[in-house]
Amino acid sequence: MKKITLFVLCFILPLTMWAQVSTIFYEGANMNYNRMNQLHTTFNGVTVLLLGGHGTNFVSLNSCEIFGADSNPSQVLTMNAPHDNASFVKLSDSLFLILGGSADLGVAPGNNVAEIFDAYNRNFTLLPTTMNYGRMFLGSTLLISGNVLIAGGWYDEPSATYGEVYNPTTQTFTVTGALNTPRSGPTIVSTNDGKATLFGGTDIYGNTSYQNVEEYDPATNQFTTVSDYFFPGEPNWSLGYRPKLNTDQKMLDGKYLYLIYNSDSLRYRLMTFDPETKTFAKYYTYPELNIPSTYFVNDIVLSSTKVYGSIVYSFLENETHKVGAYMVTFSTSSLDESNSVYSMPSAYSLGSASIDPVGQESLMICGGTTGVGYDYNFMPVNNTLYIWFFQSGVKELDSNIPTEYSLSQNYPNPFNPSTKIRFSLNTSGNVSLKIYDVLGKEITTLVDKYMDAGNYEADFNAAETGKNLTSGVYIYQLKLKDKILSNKMMILK
Image (cartoon, rainbow, N blue to C red; front, side, top):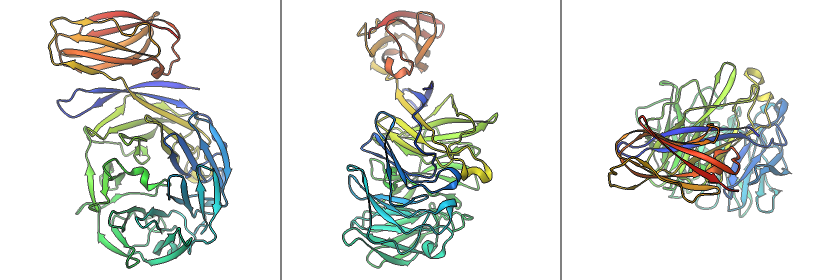
C-alpha cells in the first residue's frame, strides 16, 4: 500500500491562531468491478455503499459493493435491475429507495424500475409497481409527508417534463403537473413547509445549464417558477447532476451546501440553500475559494460529523493526473489547501468517481476512468483512493509572555502512540517543530508558521504519520528564527 504524507497550512480568520492540518493519501483495496457514475453514500458513518453505475464498455451494472471499516469490500450484492445515472432516497435509517437508470451505452430514456435496499439485512426488494416514465439523470427527495418526489430525465421529453410522487404506503407512483422548464439532472430539496424546491440541471440534451428555480406544492401537485437565478442578476451559475443522496449535503445548521460553477467568470464558488427560508446564499471562505478553471472538481463532500467539507480536485501535469484537496472548517469558514499533490497511477483520472466520508476525518474515492474523449465512458477503473485529514493540535496554554525560549521534555515518555510537547516562545517569529529519526530523516512537521510569543502545547501521534514508526529514540526539534532547541523522546510498542 502506497502512502504519502502531505502538510497543509490552514489560513483562518484574521487575528486567529493558525492551525496545521496533515493529509495522507493512500491507495485502498480494489473494487470487484470497474465502475463509474455509481450511486454512493456512507452508511453508519464508516460503511461506503456503491450501487450500480456502469462498467467496462459502457455496460450498466446491477451490482452493489459494500466497503467496511477495514477498507476492504466486505460484500458484493446483486440488484434486481441495473441503475446507472440513477437516483436514490433514504427512506429511514436503513432503507433506501433506488430509482431508474440508463440502459447499456447510456441509452435513454432509461428504465422505470424501482427497488428497496435494506442496508441492515443487505437485500434488495423489487417494488410491485414501476415509475410512470423510464428515467436517467433524475433527481429525488423525501418530502416531509413521507412521500418521494421524483423529476428529471435525459434525452426524453416526457420524463424531463413530468415528475411523479411515490407513496411508500400504497407503493404507487402518481404523475405530477408539468415542470415549467423540462430538465435533466435536477437537484431537489424538501423544504420545511412540506413543499420541495427544484433547481440546477440542464436541458434534456445537456447543452444548456438551467439556473431558474421551481417549487413543487403537494397540495396542488404542480410546479411554479419562483426565481430566474440562484442570485438575482447573476446568470450562468450551474449545478450539475450528482448520483448521491441529496441529504449528504445537509450541514448541522440545516442548510444544504453545494459547489457551483459560473461559465462567464470560469470560477467555482460555494452556495447554500436554506429549506426553512427557501433562499440561496453565497458561502464565503477565508481565504476565498479560487479553484483554477482547468481543474476537474467534484462536489463538496461533508464529513460524517458535518464539521468540515472537502473539495477534491485533479489536474493534468506532464501527462500525469495529480490530485489535491481543499478543506473548509465550518466553524470558522477557514479554507485550507494541500501544498503537495498525489500522482495518480497510469492514466487514471477522477472523472465520474464517487467520493464519500469514512469515519470522522477520511474520504474514500471509488472508480473513475482511464478513457478520454469518446472512450471516457468505456474505460472505468476499479481503483480506490483514501484521503485522511488530521490536525496536529497545537494550542496556546495561557496569555503570559515567557521570559525564556524553551523546549520541555515530552510527556508521557516513553509513549505509544501519542505524546504532548510543550514549548515557550519569548518573541514572535517563524516557528517550526519537527520530528526526526536518529539518522536525521524527517518524520513529520507539527508546526510551520508564524506564531506570537507565548506558551504552547503540541500533540504528536505516531500512528497518524502513516510511516509505521517502530520502537526507538526519535528527536523533536524546535526552531524560532535562527535559534534551535532539540530533545529526545522514545516510542515504546
